[in-house]
Structure formats: C-alpha cells, structure tokens
Image 1 (spheres, helix red, strand yellow):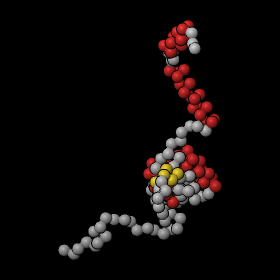
Image 2 (cartoon, one colour):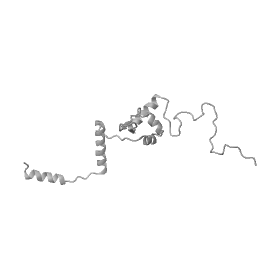
Image 3 (cartoon, rainbow, N blue to C red):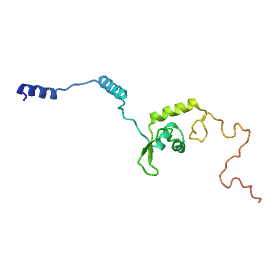
Image 4 (spheres, one colour):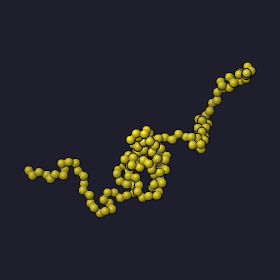
Length: 141
C-alpha cells in the first residue's frame, strides 16, 4: 500500500509542466532519431514504382524490370502482387550500379544517361517526325 504522502507527490509530478524552447525540442527529436537508427528501428518509407520513377527520373517500366535488384517488397501473394520500394535502398543500388557499370538506367526522355543522343555516334541522319498530313507532297492546283 502507498502512503498518502507518496500519492500526493505523484499527483504533483503529473501536473508539473515543463516548457522547452524550439531548439531543445529539435535537439531531443534529433537524438531520438539517432537512437532509432542505431537500433534499426526507424520506419522506412515504401513507395510504388510510379513514385520511385518520379523521384529518380527514370522510367516506371525500368523500375518494374529491375524490381528484384531494387529490393522490391511484394504486397500480397497473387500472380501480380503490388510492389513497393524503399527509396534509400534504391538510391544505394543505383549509386553502386552507376559506379560498377556503364549501363545507366534510362532517363525519362528515353535516352540513357551518359550516352550520345539517338544517331549521334552512328553518323546516320534520322528523319524528322511530323504530324500526319505534313509528309504528303503539296497537291498540284
């Protein structure tokens, strides 16, 4: 059993207010994050292929075709489970791939990073793309 005095002390403690300035609050938050990272308890963000492609400036189809290398997490067990990716893991993979290989992932424009533009190295002149109807010769009046 607790004495009446101990109960009064705990009630006083519960009602005590501590006011922290913004710098102290920020310092505490940063320290908590450090501790969680050290213990591996920090939550990792998972994003879908479209968001991953947007963040890294690559094609979504490339993300899907390299899902295993990018550490995809399967959600569900069906024939086509939804895939999610940890952007931190993907960044490390892409950095390593970029260092080890000249085969960079395609950029959103469809060209490969670090590669010459289409036809640039072959000496072949490409035909311009025109809307329909512009390729027809002018009619004789």
